[in-house]
Length: 122
Ligand SMILES: [Zn+2]
Image: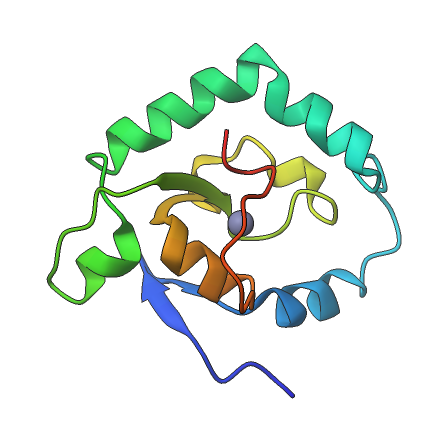
């Protein structure tokens, strides 16, 4: 099922992950973060932690999806890669590819039915 769920933030559409992966599969290069271990190493790196803090500050420590509907959520914030790390490593630290979202909205973006933590949490 193609994603029908689209939220526009800063002129960027946040699509369900399936659509981004489909788009990404058009690319054949860059498999640097394909493994879970490689992604974990990325998220544990101080450079990412600093970037994450900067994005949270830029987004005023609130969920940008919630903000887009005129409400405020500061609960369990995640800095999400709009285009996934594993397929777009060149955008891993790009401000325009990063956005602060609540845990609940993050699950929706990723099409998760059950709340769970993932490695973008930190
Ligand atoms: Zn995410």
